[in-house]
Length: 71
Image (cartoon, rainbow, N blue to C red; front, side, top):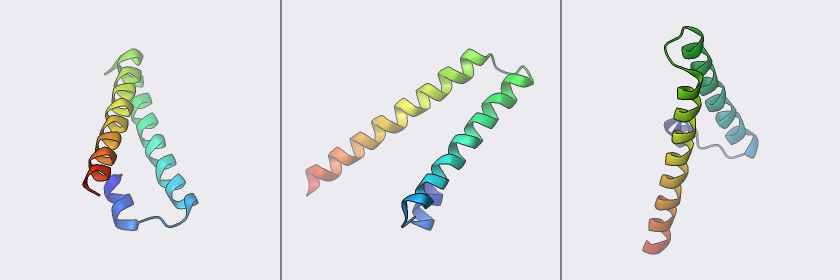
């Protein structure tokens, strides 16, 4: 999804919200599908999603800190 944001460069808040909603919908759909076909336990799916959110937010903070330091 970051590639989509980079290529499309949403100029309006609604565009960015649509990309974020699409990302959440795809992630939730994948989690439900993997749980439904009994490939993963529900706790595995929720834990993986929580880990992904933590990693993305941590990476974003790191990138922002490095960018602010270089100015």
